Image 1 (cartoon, rainbow, N blue to C red):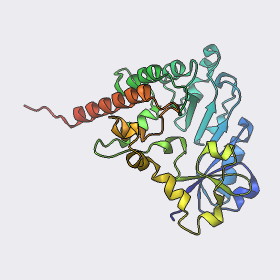
Image 2 (tube, helix red, strand yellow):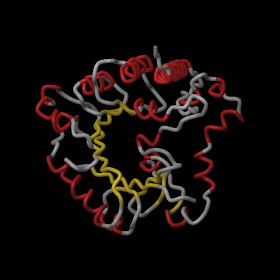
Image 3 (cartoon, rainbow, N blue to C red):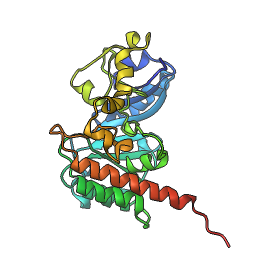
Length: 281
């Protein structure tokens, strides 16, 4: 099994037990960002990014000058008051800082505004209560707007990696792809996603998992193909190559997600066709 990138909580002993690994380290306080980044590097590891999990809105988070050269993924529940964002705009436009908000409430509107102000953002949407129509509007803006704006992931990531003839896994944009990332706790237990790590759904310790071709890992990486074996409603969806069956609601009704991913597939195809069309005299 190839060595996965690691997503670890900030624990000096844990970080120092690894060498020459690619590591994303999680912290829950802005004051720990620089310290955590230095800990990864001083242990002779490669820093992917520092993930700052904030309970406060973005407007209340102090953006420090010391982060200038540190890749930071700032995950916040909301933006907060925009009047408190204006003074932070130069810091938020730092090319190594990315803001990540969940696709709930007013966040999709606020991501649109932040992007228009030159701030690189991500919108995290998962299976459940997604406003697919609002998400479609944001996707269209991210991929089709002709006015200058900063990138919005996962749409930017999907656009860069899109190939219409094959399926696309894009969980890596949120460091959630078992083919690339393992999520660890302080005892080196391995989970295959952030959500499973929080729920303590582990598949074993990392030394055990990396010694063998662990069946659970390979099964998860190829889980999308089960849709064809089960003849699920997702397997006949025009947007399946982008969705891979990950967003089907528990009630089995695929109306919203199917429309969204089918539309995005068409938009991406049209963008690619435009790039390939060269008009000459």
